[in-house]
Amino acid sequence: MTPTPVKVAEEVRALERLDLDGLREAWRRRFGRPPQVRSVELLRLSLAWRIQAEVFGGLSAATRRRLREGGGNGRSDNVSAGVRITKQWRGELYEIERLEKGYRWKGSFYPSLSAVAKAITGVKRNGPQFFGLRDEEAA
Image 1 (cartoon, one colour):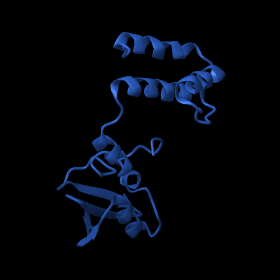
Image 2: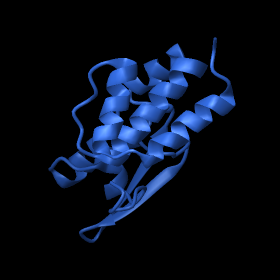
Image 3: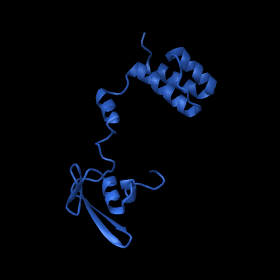
Image 4: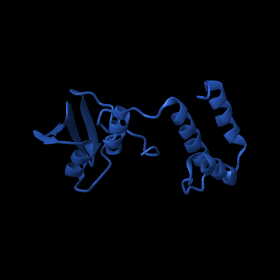
C-alpha cells in the first residue's frame, strides 16, 4: 500500500527528533548503508528527500540533465542578451556586451564572464563576482 501524503509528512517530521545515530539507523533500515556525513542537518534533509522521492517520485530526467550540465539556463549570471556590463578597474572603464551565448569585449567573443575577467586582469577570476553580479560573500 502506497503511503498517503499525510503519512509521509508525519514520517519526515519524525526525523526532527532523531540525533545523528538515529538518522543513520533510519537510513540503514530503509535504504541500506547511510552516507558518511557528520552533519545532522544534512543527513536529515537527505533522508527526508529520499523518503519523499521514493513515494512521490524524484527529479525528472530533464532536471537531472540540467543539474549535470550546470543547472539553470547554462549561464552563471542572470544577464539577458543585449545588456551591456560596465566595470571600472584600475582607472579604466571596461564595457562588455552580453550575447545570446557568451560575451563580446573589444570585438572579441568570450564564452563566459570569467574568460572576459581573465582577459582584462591577466589572472583567473570569478567573472560574475568581478563584474559585481554576485555578492562577495555568496560567491
